[in-house]
Length: 483
Image (cartoon, rainbow, N blue to C red; front, side, top):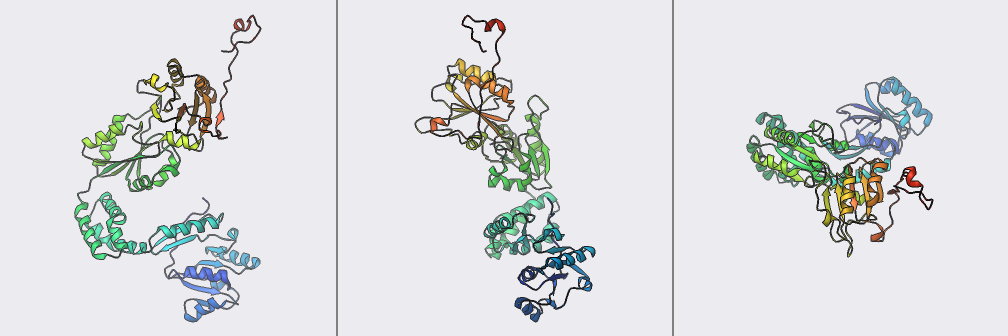
């Protein structure tokens, strides 16, 4: 980030605009949204600027800029259209310590003006550091359609309630949650609809019940990694949370959607390494919610698919704590989508299973005969470490060595890898490609079956076997024997 976003206080401040053409007029129009005292220095101002000066909206100085024109100025805009003059004026402002913006010349500026969505006093600023103004305008147009026209009225109403709510509710956490209910719930809708009497009734009820509010927990599915796969509800719950209880596989970028002041508790389970037990996690969730906090329990994928959500829900329900499950995009579906691998096919693959390749005791215990049945297709979570066992059990159950296998490691993340191989070469593929996970192993699914071409992003594994011992190579027919 080169430009740090700030909002300048221009209440009754002196602001200078140098230039008399259309670009200068554009800056004046924007500045008129504030209460700043606007002075324009221009020997030849256009009709719009002259008209504003005639009404007293701005002060027009029809002379060449002098040093005294900068006295007491808080911000300066330069739009003369003359490069040499712009450079000289910029240098003069720099020397006086006055923030300056030279139109279309960021190298001469100490600040830039973002695209603005104005719902005064709610103001949204959008900047691209000058790299893509068209993108900023596109974002502005989208936000204009999303933000209600009366959003500013809601902010003004909230400002008028601050002293009342602060005097009635001493606890910061309870007060913040009340604000969330007011500004995101029925009170908000009543204000935006202009039904003030209804808004007053809702406010009175909320104030009466605020002191009795309790903590709650949301079990949030964060998907396999890509923050863009978060649901809208997941983002909303992240914004509400006082405490984040975070799994190891949750992409750190997802935490950017949470409040900056939210406490973060990391409870990762590292295979073969330091881990937080499930019992400890349960105690943390109950402890934080009992203290009246809103807790977001962040899990990779979907909480209800190998996420141990049942154990956490049971612990919270036993403690009479409200719990909500926010589903997420599960890894099998997301990884299959990334490599364009259909998990069902009409008349070909009519059922699809999701199984785990690891257990608390180590090796998986699965119905291998059913998985190996003809036409079977399934995804294996947490199976990389037990790839030799999975391969051996499926082959022993009668599954063909040429059964297609696709492995997607770190699916949807920047370091994603995808490899196509066969069941017979599964163990070699994992070892030679250095696959460590998290990964999803798809068995029995192939692009050719669906009449599709394999995406170029998916590598093909061909095992690099080593020759057997010399005694085995001296065969009667003089050919090498490969293990």
